[in-house]
Amino acid sequence: MGKKKRKRVNYGRYGYFFIAPFFITYLLFQLWPLINTFYYSTLSYYKRNGREFVSFAGLQNFINVLGLSAGERAYVISYLKNTLIMWGCNFIPQILVSLLLAVWLTDQKVKVKGTGVMKVIVYLPSIITAASVSVLFKALFSQYGPITQTLKNWGLLSSNFDFLSTVAGSRGLISLILWWMWFGNTTLLLISGVLGIDPGLFEAADIDGATGFKKFRYITLPLLKPIMLYTLVTSAIGGLQMYDIPALFNVPETGLVGLPDDKTTTMAMYIMRLYNSDVGKAAAVSVILFIVTLIVSLILFASMRDKDEKKIRKGGGHA
Image 1 (cartoon, rainbow, N blue to C red):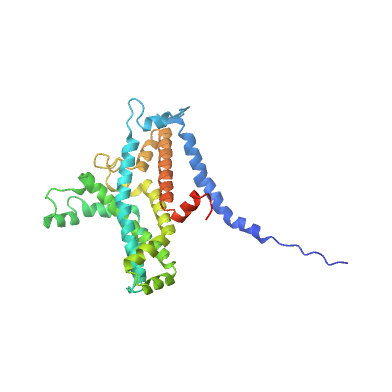
Image 2 (cartoon, rainbow, N blue to C red):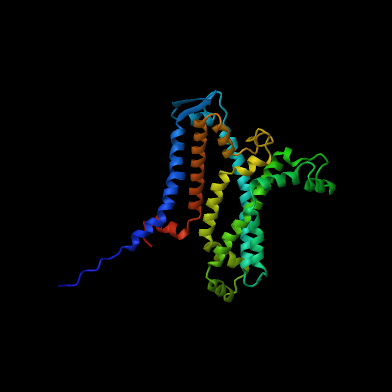
């Protein structure tokens, strides 16, 4: 009798069991809520006196929140502007400082001592809770706070100056808090990207007599594009959805109104404010925020694409 054919075990299928939890979690807690948001944005769904009223509204919620119908104001535009200003004032300094720190801490010529300790120090603000940071900065920069009083004693501020009562002061402090909390995380990401670059490239550049700036311009920056793109996109998503710091820092007791004069209210705060009265409008603003985030992400992807890849695409795929 011939030997029995051994049964082959397909080990590849077991990989699906390991990735299944991620996809199940994604479907339940991300994709399904996103689909539901689009659905609720087409409904007039609000509560009055403990009763719920639901009817189909089509695009009316979008028309209302954009201020295109009579009696409605375009709060979305104002709050989107607030969000973009505070995100920009936070992220531009963040990426510049993080990039400089990443290059400095990984430079083989400088050989900074204690880089491990410095990495821990710059990352520490990321693990502090938003509520704690908001209370701390509000106390430090209030009208009679220690930092404000010190600046007044030095003659840099007038005697009655109050950061929290000025638009620039409140927006600037929120941006400062966000920068302080997240520049460490960005620094570590960029450090990992720099360490992933082949050291032989820098050695060859040194042999050719390249200056530090030229190495940074022609080696470090181009090869950091994947990490930079990831940082830009994740920061844009997080920045457009910022909620905790603005909602806790300078708001009245009723909450969700960014002082002064509603100038620090973000899109996410507006969504939460609407959710308590009109779920349909809140969902419509959420969809608008999703579309804006998608557009910004696509612009970042397009701007960071390699020039060689663009040429290949224009040439019909031929090298």
